[in-house]
Length: 582
Image (cartoon, rainbow, N blue to C red; front, side, top):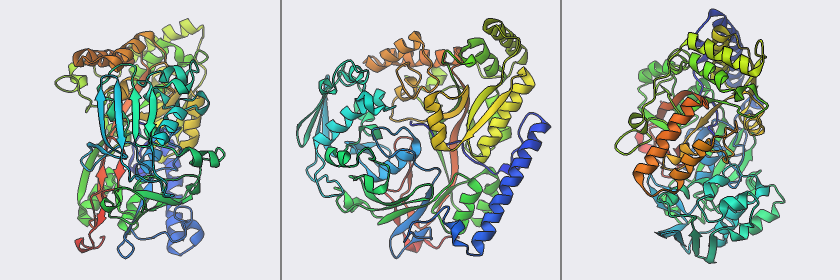
C-alpha cells in the first residue's frame, strides 16, 4: 500500500524500552515533557481558550460532537495531514483513505471488502484486452459527466515522466506503459483508449489475472483534464483545487488541522450514502488524545492502547479487532554512496534486531505481532500462508555472529570504525521511543552510533524520496489483493523502493510473478522474492499492525478494509435509538 502514515502511538509512560536503563531514562525525560504538554493543552481547552482548540478543529461550522443527529454528520480524525491529494502522484495511506470518500475509480470495494462496480458498471477481459463500460449517470461534482477520456488522461499523465509518479509502476502491465514512463515512447502509444465517452479499452503487455484488482486503487482514479489545467499546477492542493466524483465532496481543508466532507448530490449511487457529512475535526496520531476525545464524545472511533483496555471494559465500550495487513520495518539505503550498501553491515544489524522484543517490550499495543519478513501472515501461497509454504529461519539475536559480520564489513569498507549512521524517523511518541530503542541496540551490541532524524509525515516522505537517510522507519500495506502488491516493492524500477535496492535476480522473479498465468510458477516466484529479501538483508522487519478499537454505538456500518480505505464511512449511518455516547 501506500506508504503507511506513521508509526502507531501508545501510552508513552507505560513503555519500557529494552535493553538498557539509560534508554529508559532518556525516554522518560522526553515523555514527561510530552505528558506535561498534553495535560496543559487539556487544561487550557477546559477553560475555553479557543486558540488552542483551533490547533485540532478549526473549520467554521464543523460539528464538535461525535454524532450530530440533527444534521446527520459524524466527527472523526486523521492520523496525519494528507500529503498529496492528487491521485496521479499520491503514495500514502492517509491520502488514499480520504480519496476513497471523495473520489471513485472504475471499481471500488464494497462493505464486504469485495470488488464492486464503481464508475464502470461492467467489465470484461479477453486475453490481453480489458474493456470497461462506464455508467452514463456518473458525474463530477460540477455536474459534468465522468467519461472514459477522464481515465485515459489520468492514466497517461501518471506515466508521463514529468509527473514523477511513484506509483507509475502499477500501470506497467499496460502495453508500452513502462517504456512511456522511462521516456522511450510517447504516452500516446500506451495501450489505453477512450473509444467513446462510455467505453475504455485497455491493452495489456501480456494476459494477467489480477488487473481488475488493481484498478480500484487511487492511482487509477479519473481526472478531468479541463479542470486540471485550470488549476495551474495546484491540482489537489486545497479543497477548491479539486472536483470530485465520489460519495462526498471536500468543502473545507484547513491544513494541519481539519477537513470537512459533505455528501455529493451528483454521485451516481447517492441513495446508498446515508451520512450527510463527515468532519475530520482532528489531525493527530496520539492515542491518549484520541481516547480522551472518544470518551468525551467528540469522535466516533478510537484505537486503544493496552493501558486503555481496562478503561474500555470499565466503560463497557464494545470492542472490535482489526488487522490492517501492513508490515512495518526499517529500510536500509542501498545507494552507492551509503555505508549501508554493504551486505555484511546490514547482516550485522539484522542479527542484533529482535522484533519480538520490540513489539512485546517497547510498543506493547494490543493486536500487534512481530514481523518476520516483508510478507505479512495473511498473504496466501498455493494452499496456505506463503510464509508457511516457503519458511525462513526465525529472526533471533545472535551477537557473536553479528560482530563477525561487522568486522567483515569494516574490512570491506576500509574503516577502523563506522561513522554515525542516520536513522530517519517519524515524529510521534512511539516513533521516538522506537528510534531510541534502535539507537541503544546498535550501540550496545555493535558499537554503532545512530543519529536520529525526526520528521513529520510529509517531510519524512520527502526525505525518503530524496534518499536522505541510512535507515528509515517505514511501512507497506496492500494496494490490491495479490501477493505482487508486496513482491514488487523492491524491484529496481519501483520508485517506492526508497533505498534503491537493485538485484537482477529479484527483478527476474518479479517479472515472472507479473506475467505468468501458472499459479504455481507465480507462487514459487513469490517464495524466491521472500527468500532474497531476507538473505540480502534488504530490510529489518518490525511488526504487523492490528487494532483493538471502539466505535460510537450510534454509528453503524463502519468498515475497516485491508484493501482500500482503512476506515470507510461510505456505508455508515446514524442510529439515534442506539443510545448516547458513554
